[in-house]
Image (cartoon, rainbow, N blue to C red):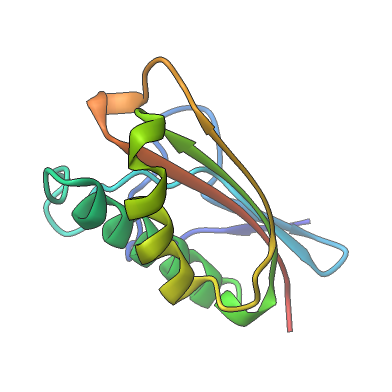
Length: 124
């Protein structure tokens, strides 16, 4: 088991890891739209927040030695299901491998953000 940690994505704020690689598969904790440089929520729209969440996932993928092309599964959480189409418009620019996905609306997300993205990828 290898732990993934990078300062290019938000630090874990609880008793969990940014990611773990087991048997060539990387499992990443959900990424909310926190700018790792400022520690602040990036943007106020679903598009802006999705961009930052995707950039955070990308930083974790890079730290694990893999990429968006090798993502096999995501779980996406939205604060409002009405944001689904706008979320997808940004998401599809990053997740080019068209991984398996679950996308659900939830009552609340940490820090009141609009989205969170969790990913699983094959390490190269």
